[in-house]
Length: 266
Ligand SMILES: [Zn+2]
Ligand SMILES: [Zn+2]
Image 1 (tube, rainbow, N blue to C red):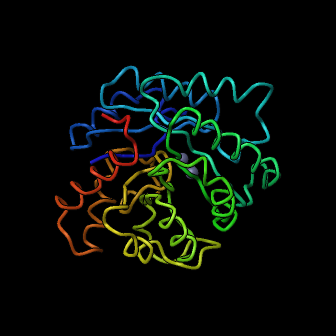
Image 2: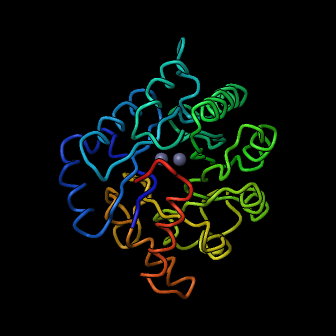
Protein backbone atom coordinates (compact mmCIF):
# COMPACT_ATOMS: atom_id res chain seq x y z
CA UNK A 1 0.00 0.00 0.00
CA UNK A 2 1.35 3.40 -0.97
CA UNK A 3 0.44 6.84 0.37
CA UNK A 4 0.95 8.94 -2.76
CA UNK A 5 0.34 12.30 -1.08
CA UNK A 6 1.03 13.42 2.47
CA UNK A 7 2.78 16.18 4.37
CA UNK A 8 5.10 14.73 7.01
CA UNK A 9 7.16 17.74 5.94
CA UNK A 10 4.72 20.03 7.81
CA UNK A 11 5.37 21.46 11.29
CA UNK A 12 2.77 19.28 12.99
CA UNK A 13 5.03 16.23 12.41
CA UNK A 14 8.33 17.93 13.35
CA UNK A 15 8.61 16.16 16.70
CA UNK A 16 7.35 12.67 15.89
CA UNK A 17 7.67 11.99 12.15
CA UNK A 18 9.97 9.04 12.86
CA UNK A 19 7.34 7.33 15.04
CA UNK A 20 4.63 8.10 12.46
CA UNK A 21 6.73 6.68 9.60
CA UNK A 22 7.62 3.52 11.53
CA UNK A 23 3.97 2.99 12.49
CA UNK A 24 2.92 3.21 8.83
CA UNK A 25 5.65 0.81 7.70
CA UNK A 26 4.70 -1.66 10.45
CA UNK A 27 1.06 -1.57 9.28
CA UNK A 28 2.03 -2.46 5.69
CA UNK A 29 2.51 0.91 4.02
CA UNK A 30 5.48 0.34 1.68
CA UNK A 31 6.07 3.83 0.22
CA UNK A 32 5.30 7.29 1.58
CA UNK A 33 5.40 10.27 -0.77
CA UNK A 34 5.73 13.67 0.88
CA UNK A 35 4.60 16.67 -1.09
CA UNK A 36 5.80 20.25 -0.94
CA UNK A 37 3.55 23.31 -1.10
CA UNK A 38 6.31 25.95 -0.97
CA UNK A 39 10.08 26.02 -1.55
CA UNK A 40 10.69 25.41 2.16
CA UNK A 41 8.32 22.46 2.55
CA UNK A 42 9.60 21.03 -0.77
CA UNK A 43 13.17 21.13 0.56
CA UNK A 44 12.03 19.43 3.74
CA UNK A 45 10.24 16.69 1.75
CA UNK A 46 13.51 15.98 -0.10
CA UNK A 47 15.41 15.92 3.19
CA UNK A 48 13.01 13.34 4.63
CA UNK A 49 13.29 11.22 1.48
CA UNK A 50 17.04 11.18 2.04
CA UNK A 51 16.59 9.70 5.52
CA UNK A 52 14.37 6.69 4.69
CA UNK A 53 14.48 4.23 1.78
CA UNK A 54 10.66 4.09 1.68
CA UNK A 55 10.16 7.86 1.38
CA UNK A 56 10.03 9.92 -1.82
CA UNK A 57 9.33 13.57 -2.55
CA UNK A 58 7.14 15.63 -4.86
CA UNK A 59 8.05 19.30 -4.99
CA UNK A 60 6.21 22.42 -6.06
CA UNK A 61 4.33 25.60 -5.19
CA UNK A 62 0.68 25.16 -4.16
CA UNK A 63 -1.70 27.64 -5.84
CA UNK A 64 -2.61 28.95 -2.41
CA UNK A 65 1.02 30.13 -2.06
CA UNK A 66 1.31 31.45 -5.63
CA UNK A 67 1.28 35.06 -4.35
CA UNK A 68 4.24 34.45 -2.01
CA UNK A 69 6.90 33.33 -4.48
CA UNK A 70 9.86 35.64 -4.95
CA UNK A 71 12.63 36.36 -7.44
CA UNK A 72 13.94 33.26 -9.23
CA UNK A 73 11.62 30.87 -7.38
CA UNK A 74 11.46 28.67 -10.48
CA UNK A 75 15.26 28.39 -10.62
CA UNK A 76 15.32 27.40 -6.97
CA UNK A 77 12.53 24.88 -7.51
CA UNK A 78 14.40 23.38 -10.47
CA UNK A 79 17.41 22.79 -8.24
CA UNK A 80 15.27 21.05 -5.59
CA UNK A 81 13.39 19.04 -8.24
CA UNK A 82 16.62 17.72 -9.74
CA UNK A 83 17.33 15.54 -6.68
CA UNK A 84 17.20 11.77 -7.34
CA UNK A 85 14.27 10.99 -5.02
CA UNK A 86 11.99 13.69 -6.45
CA UNK A 87 9.46 11.77 -8.54
CA UNK A 88 7.06 14.52 -9.71
CA UNK A 89 6.19 18.22 -9.63
CA UNK A 90 3.33 19.01 -7.25
CA UNK A 91 1.18 19.93 -5.63
CA UNK A 92 0.43 22.43 -8.35
CA UNK A 93 -2.85 23.59 -9.86
CA UNK A 94 -5.67 26.01 -9.19
CA UNK A 95 -7.65 26.75 -6.03
CA UNK A 96 -10.78 28.94 -5.97
CA UNK A 97 -11.77 28.02 -2.43
CA UNK A 98 -12.23 31.05 -0.16
CA UNK A 99 -9.74 30.46 2.69
CA UNK A 100 -10.26 32.20 6.03
CA UNK A 101 -6.57 33.16 6.14
CA UNK A 102 -6.15 34.89 2.78
CA UNK A 103 -9.25 34.32 0.66
CA UNK A 104 -8.58 33.42 -2.98
CA UNK A 105 -5.14 34.13 -4.45
CA UNK A 106 -5.38 36.19 -7.67
CA UNK A 107 -6.40 33.61 -10.31
CA UNK A 108 -4.07 35.15 -12.90
CA UNK A 109 -1.11 34.72 -10.57
CA UNK A 110 -2.18 31.16 -9.76
CA UNK A 111 -2.29 30.34 -13.46
CA UNK A 112 1.16 31.84 -14.15
CA UNK A 113 2.73 29.83 -11.33
CA UNK A 114 0.89 26.66 -12.44
CA UNK A 115 2.01 27.02 -16.07
CA UNK A 116 5.64 27.78 -15.13
CA UNK A 117 5.68 24.51 -13.18
CA UNK A 118 4.04 22.50 -15.98
CA UNK A 119 6.92 23.70 -18.19
CA UNK A 120 9.52 22.87 -15.54
CA UNK A 121 8.12 19.35 -15.16
CA UNK A 122 8.37 18.87 -18.91
CA UNK A 123 11.96 20.12 -18.91
CA UNK A 124 12.88 17.67 -16.11
CA UNK A 125 10.82 14.81 -17.57
CA UNK A 126 8.70 14.57 -14.41
CA UNK A 127 4.95 13.84 -14.15
CA UNK A 128 2.50 16.20 -12.42
CA UNK A 129 0.59 15.90 -9.18
CA UNK A 130 -2.37 18.24 -9.55
CA UNK A 131 -4.22 20.09 -6.80
CA UNK A 132 -7.70 21.31 -7.71
CA UNK A 133 -10.19 22.86 -5.35
CA UNK A 134 -13.36 24.33 -6.86
CA UNK A 135 -11.43 25.01 -10.06
CA UNK A 136 -11.83 21.78 -12.04
CA UNK A 137 -12.89 23.35 -15.35
CA UNK A 138 -10.06 25.89 -15.23
CA UNK A 139 -7.46 23.20 -14.41
CA UNK A 140 -8.64 21.11 -17.37
CA UNK A 141 -8.58 24.15 -19.67
CA UNK A 142 -4.99 25.00 -18.67
CA UNK A 143 -3.79 21.40 -19.01
CA UNK A 144 -5.42 21.06 -22.43
CA UNK A 145 -3.76 24.23 -23.67
CA UNK A 146 -0.37 22.85 -22.55
CA UNK A 147 -0.89 19.33 -23.85
CA UNK A 148 2.46 19.35 -25.63
CA UNK A 149 4.15 19.70 -22.21
CA UNK A 150 2.49 16.63 -20.71
CA UNK A 151 4.21 13.26 -20.40
CA UNK A 152 2.56 9.94 -21.18
CA UNK A 153 1.17 9.16 -18.65
CA UNK A 154 0.96 12.80 -17.48
CA UNK A 155 0.57 12.21 -13.72
CA UNK A 156 -2.34 12.36 -11.32
CA UNK A 157 -5.00 14.55 -9.77
CA UNK A 158 -4.64 14.36 -6.00
CA UNK A 159 -7.57 14.50 -3.55
CA UNK A 160 -10.08 14.38 -6.35
CA UNK A 161 -13.36 16.26 -6.03
CA UNK A 162 -15.14 17.70 -9.07
CA UNK A 163 -17.94 17.02 -11.52
CA UNK A 164 -18.12 13.83 -13.60
CA UNK A 165 -17.30 15.94 -16.69
CA UNK A 166 -14.04 17.10 -15.13
CA UNK A 167 -13.29 13.50 -14.15
CA UNK A 168 -13.94 12.36 -17.71
CA UNK A 169 -11.60 15.01 -19.15
CA UNK A 170 -8.83 14.17 -16.65
CA UNK A 171 -9.11 10.47 -17.52
CA UNK A 172 -9.14 11.22 -21.25
CA UNK A 173 -5.86 13.09 -20.88
CA UNK A 174 -4.41 10.00 -19.18
CA UNK A 175 -4.31 11.20 -15.58
CA UNK A 176 -4.74 8.88 -12.59
CA UNK A 177 -7.05 9.91 -9.76
CA UNK A 178 -6.25 9.98 -6.03
CA UNK A 179 -8.69 9.68 -3.15
CA UNK A 180 -8.22 10.47 0.53
CA UNK A 181 -9.89 9.80 3.89
CA UNK A 182 -12.71 12.21 3.09
CA UNK A 183 -14.17 9.54 0.79
CA UNK A 184 -15.39 7.92 4.05
CA UNK A 185 -17.40 11.01 5.10
CA UNK A 186 -21.10 10.99 4.32
CA UNK A 187 -22.79 13.79 2.38
CA UNK A 188 -21.35 16.40 0.05
CA UNK A 189 -18.52 18.78 0.90
CA UNK A 190 -19.38 22.48 0.59
CA UNK A 191 -19.42 23.56 -3.05
CA UNK A 192 -19.33 20.01 -4.48
CA UNK A 193 -22.15 18.40 -6.48
CA UNK A 194 -21.01 14.76 -6.78
CA UNK A 195 -20.22 12.55 -3.78
CA UNK A 196 -16.70 11.16 -3.48
CA UNK A 197 -17.89 7.51 -3.35
CA UNK A 198 -19.75 8.14 -6.62
CA UNK A 199 -16.53 9.42 -8.19
CA UNK A 200 -14.42 6.62 -6.68
CA UNK A 201 -16.76 4.05 -8.23
CA UNK A 202 -16.45 5.72 -11.63
CA UNK A 203 -12.64 5.70 -12.00
CA UNK A 204 -11.29 2.68 -13.92
CA UNK A 205 -9.43 0.34 -11.58
CA UNK A 206 -6.15 0.84 -13.43
CA UNK A 207 -6.29 4.62 -12.82
CA UNK A 208 -7.04 4.86 -9.11
CA UNK A 209 -4.52 5.63 -6.35
CA UNK A 210 -4.75 6.16 -2.60
CA UNK A 211 -3.43 8.90 -0.38
CA UNK A 212 -3.95 10.54 3.00
CA UNK A 213 -3.06 14.26 2.61
CA UNK A 214 -1.87 13.93 6.23
CA UNK A 215 -2.28 15.86 8.50
CA UNK A 216 -5.66 16.67 6.90
CA UNK A 217 -8.74 14.67 5.85
CA UNK A 218 -8.53 11.94 8.50
CA UNK A 219 -10.79 8.99 7.59
CA UNK A 220 -13.59 7.77 9.82
CA UNK A 221 -13.55 6.68 12.61
CA UNK A 222 -10.54 8.91 13.45
CA UNK A 223 -11.95 12.11 11.93
CA UNK A 224 -11.11 15.05 14.19
CA UNK A 225 -7.59 13.82 15.01
CA UNK A 226 -4.39 14.32 13.01
CA UNK A 227 -4.22 12.15 9.91
CA UNK A 228 -1.16 9.95 9.24
CA UNK A 229 0.06 7.64 6.44
CA UNK A 230 -0.91 4.41 8.27
CA UNK A 231 -4.57 5.44 7.76
CA UNK A 232 -4.20 5.08 3.98
CA UNK A 233 -5.13 1.46 4.61
CA UNK A 234 -8.54 2.52 6.00
CA UNK A 235 -9.25 4.53 2.85
CA UNK A 236 -8.12 1.64 0.63
CA UNK A 237 -10.34 -0.81 2.52
CA UNK A 238 -13.27 1.59 2.13
CA UNK A 239 -12.82 1.98 -1.64
CA UNK A 240 -12.19 -1.75 -2.18
CA UNK A 241 -15.47 -2.51 -0.41
CA UNK A 242 -17.26 0.21 -2.38
CA UNK A 243 -16.10 -1.46 -5.61
CA UNK A 244 -16.79 -4.99 -4.41
CA UNK A 245 -13.22 -6.26 -4.66
CA UNK A 246 -10.83 -7.63 -2.06
CA UNK A 247 -8.37 -5.38 -0.26
CA UNK A 248 -5.51 -7.50 -1.64
CA UNK A 249 -6.62 -7.02 -5.23
CA UNK A 250 -7.13 -3.29 -4.70
CA UNK A 251 -3.74 -2.93 -3.02
CA UNK A 252 -1.91 -4.76 -5.80
CA UNK A 253 -3.64 -2.69 -8.48
CA UNK A 254 -3.09 0.70 -6.83
CA UNK A 255 0.60 -0.12 -6.22
CA UNK A 256 0.93 -0.97 -9.89
CA UNK A 257 -0.88 2.24 -10.88
CA UNK A 258 1.40 4.33 -8.68
CA UNK A 259 4.54 2.89 -10.29
CA UNK A 260 3.06 3.52 -13.75
CA UNK A 261 2.50 7.21 -12.93
CA UNK A 262 5.87 7.74 -11.22
CA UNK A 263 8.64 5.90 -13.12
CA UNK A 264 11.31 7.18 -10.68
CA UNK A 265 9.61 5.42 -7.74
CA UNK A 266 11.49 2.27 -6.75
ZN1 LIG B 1 -4.05 19.62 -2.34
ZN1 LIG C 1 -1.71 18.22 0.12
